[in-house]
Length: 243
Image (cartoon, rainbow, N blue to C red; front, side):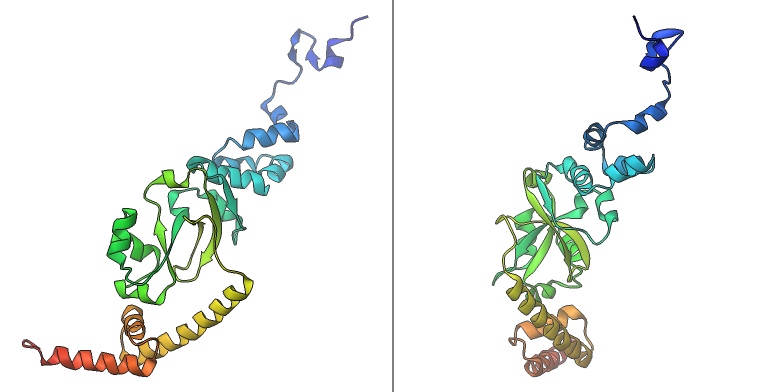
């Protein structure tokens, strides 16, 4: 005996059609299927999907779904770390990514700009630097991504960079960040001391951070020597014709 069409979830007037063709049925997709669908959406669309119902919100808020939407446009293989807020995932622009460049002796901002095919002003803006001298007090610079292809198949690490004062997904050309917890703690303490010295020199000389960083760099971090060197340079300038 055949079962009534209503028992099969079909419309009696049209047994081949579902009894309720409303789009609201899409809210009740199986979890695995819904996850597969959301994995194909952009970050903005995932955010909209989270507003549909509780089930969609739960799946759309899942870390794996958010990461997949964030990295898909650029072919990034994996994103490690947790951002300060979920809002980080919603803007998957290229500006959310940066390349980590370790500053070495002899480096200059123009030279680094040429190496990575970016503008000097973009590097300075991205790293919150007022002048080129700012490079001398930093162990690394964040380089804006000019060629998205370098992100293909990469692993990026979400970091809050305290110099640039921005949270970005950082790509390390060498493959991964270096250092352990102890060295990071020591580096943080050293950075705090350097910041206090920099602030003292900047106020004493009445100059910007970049200039203070430069004179500290050429005097091996000795604040007294930095101020003496600045005074000598200032006297020399004043003795030149036209001053």
